[in-house]
Amino acid sequence: MLVTNSGPTSRGKLYIVATPIGNLEDISQRAIRILNEVALIAAEDTRHSQKLLSHYQIGTRLLSLHEHNERQRADQLLSKLGNGMDLALISDAGTPLISDPGYALVNLCREAGIDVIPIPGPCAAITALCAAGLPTDKFSFKGFLPVKEMARREALGALKGDSGTCIFYEAPRRIADTVKMLVEELGPHRQLVLAKELTKTFETFKSGDAEQVLAWLLEDPLHQKGEFVLMVGPDLNVNESLPQQALDLLDSLLEVLPLKKAAAITASHYGLKKNELYQLGLQRQGR
Image (cartoon, rainbow, N blue to C red; front, top):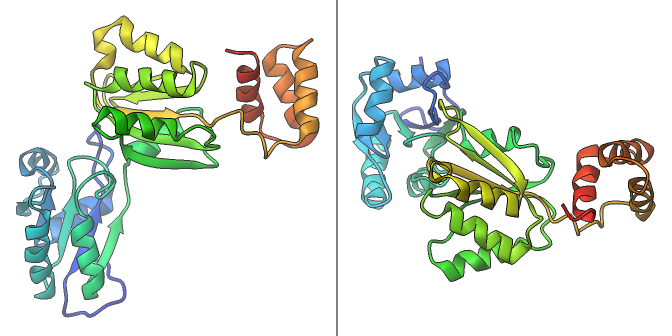
């Protein structure tokens, strides 16, 4: 029996179902049940999604919904929902609508009073962030960077003064150029983390300042292959949230102690986050 929420019982429901981003084991029992029970699954690439369905022996019919046909398909699917059919929306990987198609359909459903029910699961941006070692108390997801060079450069330049972690998706053919732009726009010492091939056999996290990450990308062509999540650490020159006394103590301790110890003592004394002070210390030491 499908789980319902408020709304007319005569209408169907749209389920937004997150699917694995690599490892097929990363799917919930609820997602499998919903995909088995709905009348139709709208998928970004039916051939790609059929592999997942076959793996879990799900026989529900697939219908394509991608960036080139979304408007037309949305009207078609809305009609089916209005006639009482329960439908699911999936993307090639991860949570639908997060830099993937589906907005037009969900928006139409909300306007029409159709129940839209999220089935949570994997999302590459959150998967990367939780293991990156960058601040997570304040972050923003920016999606894919612009393809055109000038627009991409402006988007990266706008990160000057940003006090949170910024998350991007980037294509392998552009990743080296993008990191090079970061060095040029934000300086060589801005902290970055690259995550690629998440949950797959060759999952890799590479962290360091922008200059170090760029050098790593350029040292081996294989380092530029895969699906990338690019995370840019906060601008550590923005210190409004830190008491001046804490900054003074950190500077004094750095003259006589290793950075890790200085950051820990300062954090303990002022009730601050040790990692934030550690990253600030790296910046002040010019690393």
